[in-house]
Image (cartoon, rainbow, N blue to C red):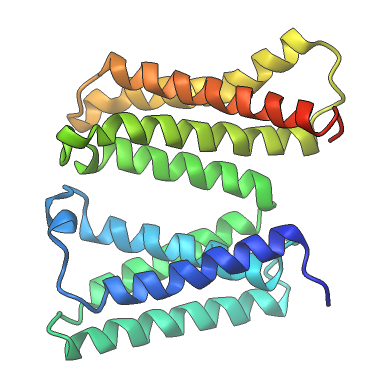
Length: 240
């Protein structure tokens, strides 16, 4: 069976992501994880949420995860089984076996499949990207650890560029044909800007500073995505 582009991309990312998280859980806890300010359980939820997302679309790249589908239960059993084995093996590499970590893993798995039972690929990508941007921005200290490398600015630039590109893909598949370039541009910018402003407005509730430079770099990322899309559109001769 010939693999289509989406399926190839998911398999490639899964082939990189799964070995990486296995390696990270079988080495001493990295200093960056200790200093991140993020709950250990939150990291487990995020890691297995992402793994479930990738495993499901590797198995069924064009379908929602309907609970009447046997594939869903196979994916659920496979990823939960892996989580149990992963947690058990940590006891042999100098790390503790923690039942609460396993429960957090299962929560991430069920949360992922629950979302995928409601949303298709691009809406799920959009919600997942928003979730990860929110958690990293407001529930961790990761962006404050390496100020000398301007990590905060790089994150906001790349994260909002990526989110806007995903939003474009969603619009291309779910919106009506473009009737006005101005209206299309406003629609294109609306959701990424609402996400950016929403995260920054709620930052104070998580004891994070309200930084205008973050908004500026986020807006730059949104504009960069639009410019990249426009350039690609022209290079293709105006064909979708």
